[in-house]
Amino acid sequence: MNKKTRFLGWLLEGICALFIALCAGMLFLWTQIATEIAAQAPEFAYLRIPALICAEITTACVIVFIVCLWVLIHKALVKKIFVYPTLTWVYIMIMMCAIAGICALVCVIMVPPSPATYALSAALLFCVAVAIVLLILRNLLCEAIEQHDELAGVI
Image (tube, rainbow, N blue to C red; front, top):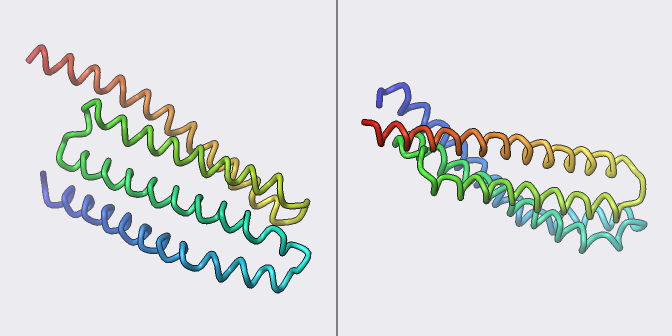
């Protein structure tokens, strides 16, 4: 592996670590944010606990998603990406998108029509789009693994 590739890998892994740290910090801030919103908008105070639960679950899904991404980056750096166990990490990423999307859908259903509803709808669409892209990439990875195994059998 050349120095440029190694540096890029370390940079990507460092960015993943930074995002994980930021998301972990958000897990502790959601309670305070929910309390402040409930105090400033008493008409939405009844949504404090359900919205807090959805925010916590979604943040945990983002953390797991980034950890899976980190593992896949590392596997690519050590050239062990074309093996079937790699698909497990992709499946976990797809599941995290689905869970986050379900949380966004629950929030869209709970919140009365407001600007927040549009933001939650955008988050839902984003989760669906990422899940579709991951499904396509999973299929491409499956084909690449099969071709890699076939090539290894020839050599």
